[in-house]
Image 1 (cartoon, rainbow, N blue to C red):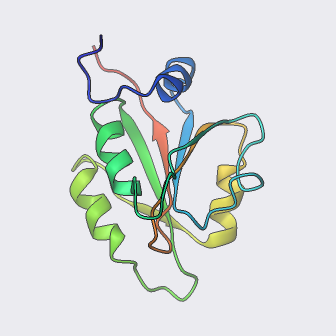
Image 2: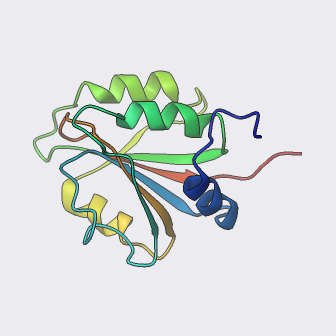
Image 3: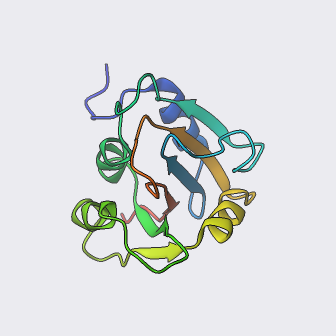
Length: 139
């Protein structure tokens, strides 16, 4: 039995195989999961029903599980900031600056060979996708 908040075996396996510089995509229910990420990336579907689990639910667990070096959120091209960005900033380590990418640059980044894991959520808010880059475990 594990003593961490993260118990999902498929996610644990993907994270165990990933390392420094690997990327994790946590995506809302509008995301093109089959075409919008590295074809070799592990895909985990947590989108059982609309609204359950959310991107921020998953982010909270991952922040306690892995070191995060970078975080890139998908942003509208019109420059507006989705309300979820404030939640990201509350959840992410205070040492991180949330960076943004437009829709197509975000998709391109998610298609990188460095993307090891894509997590589908039941998140209903638009522009609620984030790419996390795994950092180094400091000993």
